[in-house]
Image (cartoon, rainbow, N blue to C red; front, side, top):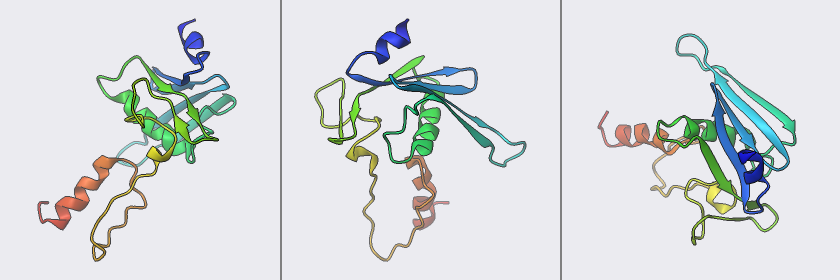
Length: 147
């Protein structure tokens, strides 16, 4: 009953865990089961995005991107067995954190989901496909001749 008790709390939006190779995201309204099946070789696999009842990530602008990022987070070697996200109010665009801060480091929802990068106007990088901050590194190494 731990997971159902956690998601019943008003301050908690999502409880995230793993089951085998799948990410399981539970909210008060539904359950999302997500996995990334890898193709043989270096090709990308086909993601599986299965929702029971209502999509727990429906409040964010790109739920599939959020699922991919949470899948990556839950796969880190030191990720907890359960990852808990504070509540997100999409009407007021505010997030609830577990400590007294203005945003949730690594959280979902609100203005913190809008990434930006300031660069000189003559630098023409195509960043449309970037999903993780780590994907910026190759751009910097090419720019400064380090690769």
